[in-house]
Amino acid sequence: MAAPVGKLKRINARLRGTAAAEIPAPYTVKCECGCEMQGDRSSSWKQTVCGECMSDLYLLPRNVYPGTISVPNDVIGGSFGARLSVVAGEMARLPGRRPKSRPAVQEPAPDVAAAKKDEPDAPTVVVPRVSLRDRLRRTFTPLRLLAFGMLLLVTATLAAIWQQNRVENARTQWRTSMDQIPELLDAADFPALESALTTAVAAGAILGRDDAEWRLTFNLLEETQALSSLASASLPIILQEADLESLNSPEELQRLSSTLEHQTFVVDGYIDPAGETSAEFNIDVPVPPGRPVVQVRLELQELQPLISSGGDGRCIFAFRVDEIVRADEDGSETWSISVDPYSFALLTSAVHCTELGWNIEEDEELENVLLSQRSFIEESIDWADRHDAIAERQLVESGDAP
Figure 1 (spheres, one colour):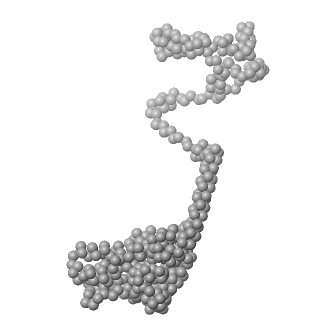
Figure 2 (figure 1 turned 30 degrees about the vertical axis):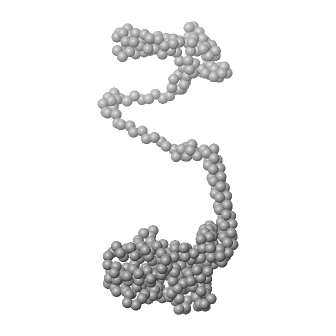
Figure 3 (figure 1 turned 90 degrees about the vertical axis):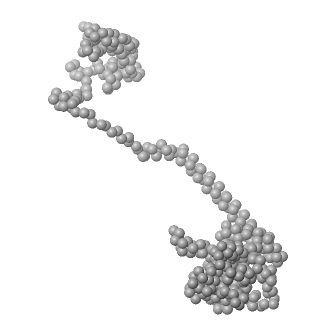
């Protein structure tokens, strides 16, 4: 009769949710000395003493949490309906039928267990599992993607506005400069003309211009810059005053080279093919009789169409000296002067020629030379891009080209 009464008490406590307080929770604690102690758990932890070895033992209180698969308990959580459903299920079980339980783990044989116990534990290496998909999903959240897209949109909009304003300002500067250049050229105001030409060339580069008007403007800037750095004397006079025969030391030769490198010479003379390649030319520089022979050499293949156009080779041009070589250094009796191809510029303006002392009205052939060079510059795309081509060839010759 006691069993049915206890079962009814447990059912009543479960329905009220007070099973942990009313149902006894027995325990069995085994001490290190092998002695076992039994009893019921209380609502709080308590301390007891082993009757054999007098060691302190600590007992846990009742489990007040609902049972789980690994930790069974008479406490049932949830609402009253959920507790009633569990109690009704227990009461409806057939007599003698046990609830399903997990299969028991088969214990190894004693000799196998002893062998495994004697074997040392193998080191365990735990490799963290990293999910790239989860990592990307946590990094690129929808909110972050939206913010990043908005940032890209704002950046692209600002860049487009900046480029549009830059182009509009370049158009304005180009039109303004092109209106000022003829007036400044007629007034022979070369400092202001150089400033206006510099602004026009920079604006044309932004606009991507590559027409005949831009080429003439760029060449006119080179002419004006040549006048601003014009040498105080002609190249023959400087060579005559230098007395090449008396230059015996390398220091004197270096001093002469430095003097020539920083001065621009404007020549009305003849340019002839050197005969070796189509890119090398000889510049006729008159030297007084009895002096050492001086040969001025220019290497610029973009000039070939002008020289081979059928004329006599007369040109009006400006250049700076790149290098001077003594006559005895290469086993020749001729002094060699190489022209800096970057500095070579053809003249097309009658105003500049008048400033240099040449009268166009008295020399009809000079006017034809200027017109021929002007037409060459308008039609030649290679001439406008010669500076980039020169730089590329020099990189190839030096072995630094990519």
